[in-house]
Length: 344
Image (cartoon, rainbow, N blue to C red; front, side):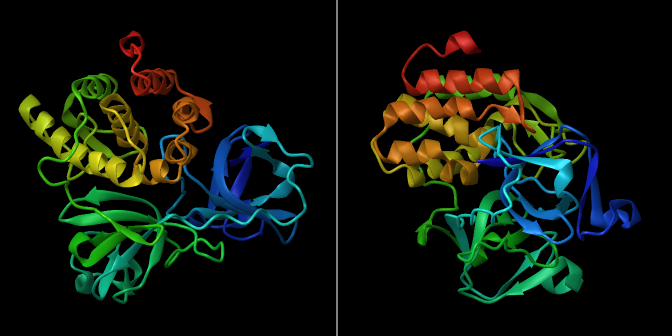
């Protein structure tokens, strides 16, 4: 895994020009010592690097001002691999080719990618992108959004290029108009039918303990309106709910993550293993779990190796977060049917 660490205060830029001369929408200031996850990097003109930002430890796509592809002055940064500086930093050789996204989305009819959930025909061109039926677009993440929509983050295509439209790689799309794919095969993006496998009581206790209960809408650490036990779908400022409603929202949200674990894991799981993975996926997202080493090892039947991967997901902006460390230890313990309550 690659990341970038600034060694002095500098700018992320949309061109290789001097940062102080660019308009604000074409530059992003970053402090000395900032660590940013990368999908890829490559040598660019004028002693710069062209970087594509990646996903953080919580599985969220990092971007600034709606973009995740930027230039940065090469002497101002250090490239890290698995947290260790490359030597030289960065290597002047071509960057490693980023891997195509495992997930993709295929419209079933002609439709719009949109910046809001409004009807596509009513939006200005800057807030919409027409896509033909059967077009396949790589994605790195998706989540349920209001008004029967999905929020998708576009990923890397087969040529190693970041897919984006109009400078943006995060869009909304009408859910009934699309089909989600993993490795080219359809996966469910609707709530799992009644009777499907569910998180057990131990997993639910673990998840509730770390998510906490908030009955009034609040902005989470990344600026998303949240309520209840971490619900983000359809939340609006000033919203208040009851504890019973929070339970209802949680059960609705859990169906999505229970379905994701069921779809993605191809080996047998006991109830504790399944429940630990649901808690993990609820926290980091289906896209992050789907592309993780944890899932790869698990599907190779390396259960112990997969268990040890939980603890690698404890960083926020490159810094270890004690709360995430405890959660990962609890999820690992539950996965191994050990006492997870010592970490609550």
